[in-house]
Length: 274
Image 1 (cartoon, rainbow, N blue to C red):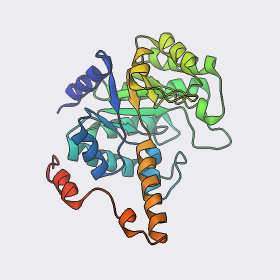
Image 2: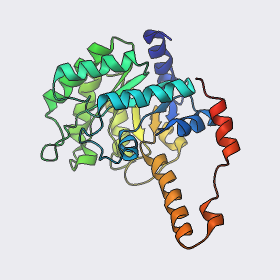
Image 3: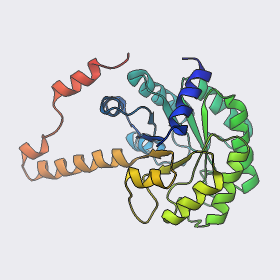
Image 4: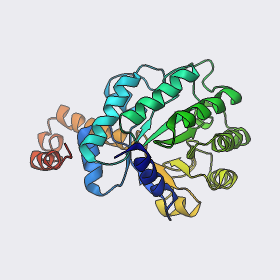
């Protein structure tokens, strides 16, 4: 599908009544499970991808090329629009951000997120002007072929400043971001303030505000247009693995080996869009 058509298709999911729930896959089979469940789009998760490789998230230890190939695999298997959780755009320079967005479009991604993070523990959030400029560069490179999400990580980087968060998200929208995103606002009131400040730009929420896990219906009522799951589905799968491992150590083979059957796995793979 040409880039402009994919852009329009993916944006339509955001602007329709109710928006979309966009779960994040971490490998081929997880993507197929999500597609089979009926989801209309999926995302990558930088944290889940890094974990599958035994690397930390947000420290530039997963390469742009690795993430691009991972995202292309998810899209090829499912035929669904894929949104790439591409951290800070994989580079300190404006040119690096532009190159990442261009590469994502060429790899057939439907969307890409650009964060205001830096990958540096001593200065995890970039200055306001730099952060806004990087989103501006991403939008220019996207050329309406790929949906750009402008994201600030204030709340998850120890900067609980709602005013600055709204200032950043508003500026991202003003320079052309199609969607804006601030993981884990403190509560529903803060989330509603964000939605109101950036309207009509769609807002993505990671699961819920920090204080309480809400339902999809409650988030939609607050004006949220996209709900993503980040690494949480992956973490749930790993929790099941951990419990199976504990059962195995205890000698309980039945519990340790309960799970999806190979017939079901084969059925999902046979139905892939290869």
